[in-house]
Image (cartoon, rainbow, N blue to C red):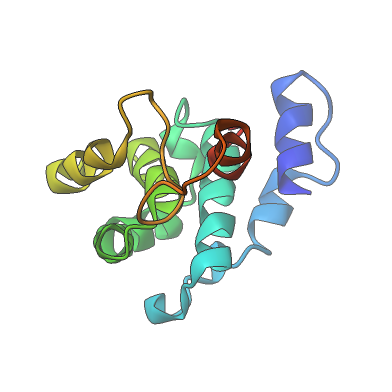
Length: 145
């Protein structure tokens, strides 16, 4: 619903329901204990940030308490998913960092992420590239966003 409301606002329509009300209902708005983040929750975090900041165009779209929470905990999560070689999620978290009012732009994380990219530009979702027929491998690693 947050994504739909953000879309409506960006295209000059009345956001229904209003984004502020929806933003307050997200997992991220509750700033819960940071160790409760797992894969699905982390993806929810990324999309919440993308919608609230217009993909980084408006870092001020994040509520200040959420921006402060992410400033503290996002580097920890980035480090964790770098260690786990969860490349797809790490990539989204690195974009979240770039959307923040004060991004850290963690050089080690960006280098690790870049090192996982294949010569043809493909990126494994987790650890290493799967093997198999090119079309089947493409279907496994293709990410439309």
